[in-house]
Each structure stands twice: as structure tokens, then as C-alpha cells.
Length: 326
Image (cartoon, rainbow, N blue to C red; front, side, top):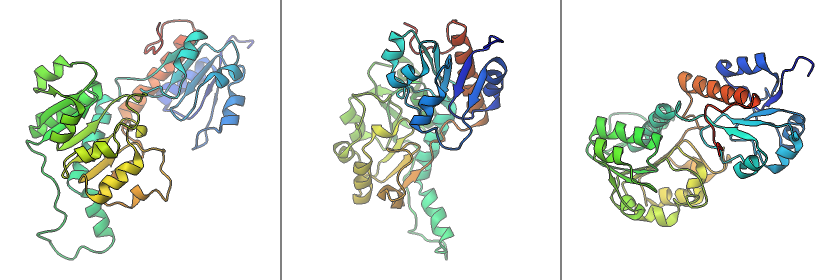
């Protein structure tokens, strides 16, 4: 460009806290449609770009990097996760990859607990009951849910969000905390009295199982029919991490057959679920449209970090949150 500004493609509109800076410092084309750009459009839009600001819904692989061209310097992901990006391929090409951790920790933990208490206390089911005109009087045996105080919480994936969720349940409801993680988390043990256990023990003993694990080859589908059968029939399953961590058809069967009491999901597989997905018919499954990070401060923070990563990468400088620093 004659003015020296780099060319970038932003695959969706993000908050102005980050997007305004990108537009000011770059020749930025922003996809403004409500749905992600179709694959063929995405490949066309990235041609000649120096940087791409992408979402989890955008597959950033070798084909896309080839389409962009050799001048592509940075891929900034508007998300904590980056399963949508071929990191080894980007690293091989010298393309820097950034993500947006930390700023959504509390918001996502709040959503996890919101789903837990909503599912345990049958809040959405009760609301639907009222809206259907079925509420006639106070019912001594109606809509009885699970207690929360002094129960057992099982955290699968004791990272930042898992720790924040455990703090809420331990501090507010005096829950006993079990956790399953690849490595020991001494802070959780010292601060919360958490105990690291094998997955089978966690499933058998927990009243609430909250998933905060990364999605990889070892965790994909880890919550399947066998796992649900190991849980208490009164247990509540919560997933605010990634949809493919659970097998959706197996979860439906477990909820339908009473193998577990209820579930609260902020993520599904696929996402969004098909309108005829039987999971949507169950009163004991609360589903939110992936809104764990949907607070003003979290989304603005994500936008600021994503913009920083993009602009720093275009300048050849270290990213604020750098996935492939190696």
C-alpha cells in the first residue's frame, strides 16, 4: 500500500474497543454478516493479507495460509482456544498466532455456575411450566431439585476457569472439591482443600461435574455413555469448555434414561445443534448459546488483546498473548 498500512481481514465484527484501532492502523476489511464467512469467501478475502483476525468458527489451515500468501505474518484468534488453527503449520511458516486468555475467566466461571444452579434447581423447566400455563398452585411435590450446600464438586481441567469455578462453589456453598488434571495444582489443594483424583473416582463421588478441559485427541469424547453411567443418578453435568468433550447422543440417552439428573451446556457438538436434535426436547438439559464470555468487560478485553496481537504481529514484535512463541 502506498501509505504503508498493512492489509488485514477481520472475519466478524468484534467490539469497538479493539476494532477501532485495527481500522485506524490497517487497511481492514471486516465481515459484517451475522454468520461466519463461507469457506470459499474466506479463502478469497484473505488473499494478499498481512494479518487475519479470526474466530473459532474459522478454520485456519494450510489451505488458508496458502490462499493468503507468503506475506501473512500473524493470525490473531478472538478466543482463548485455538483448535481452529493449525499451529504447527503456522509455526513452520513463521506466522505468529495469538489468543485472548485471562480476561474471560470470571465471566465463564460465572456462566458455569449459572448453568449448574439452573439445572440443579430446574429453573428453566419451571419457567417453561409457567409460560405453558400449567402453574395453578404451589405444589409440595413439584419441581424438586438438588441441594447445593456441602455437596461434592468435580472439576475436570483445573486451569484458570476451573479454579475460578471451584472458588465459587467452595467459598459460597462450602462444597468439597475433587479435581482431575494432568498435573497437580498445589494452589487448589492449599486454598480450597481440593483433592486430585482419577477420573473414575471423580465421576463416582461428585454431585456436580464441571468440565474445563482443553479439547485434544485425549479429551475428545471423554464424556460418553460409559462415563455418564459412572456418575450418580442425582448428578448434574456442566460443560462450558468445548462441545466435542461430550458425546451429544450419549448425553441425551443418559438424561433421558435418568442415568444423571440434569445437564447445563454452554457448548454443543455440533454448534449450534440442529433444530431436531433430541437434546433440545429434554426439560432437564439447560443449553445456552456459547455466551460464557458475553459480558461487557470480557468481550472488550478480548477485543483489545486480539487487536494488540494483530498489530504487534504485523510489526514483527512479540505478541501480548503468543500461542507459538517457540
